[in-house]
Image (tube, rainbow, N blue to C red; front, side):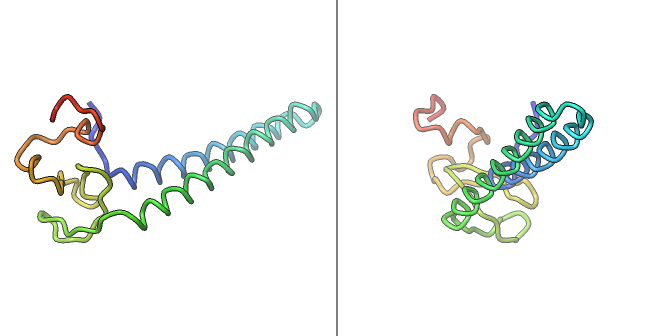
Length: 118
């Protein structure tokens, strides 16, 4: 099982990967200079990927402004938390604001509306 990361950092990493994918796709399009339609197709797909990353960055920016800021009890740094459970963005300490979940083992399913773990 892969290690769980902070939700905000995970979404920002996805947006950054969209930028790199877009640039790489556009670069691949340069190899098809003789076939303008194929080159144009690669360029459009690359631009769409970069525009999608702009949308994702704007979305996570608005989520980040509404996220609850807390001080991590482990490292003492401020971090933002989305949902009922999340990880510290600095030290990956499991965090919760729900008193019924304190002391329980961390599980991402606690953030789902109809969780079987409740």
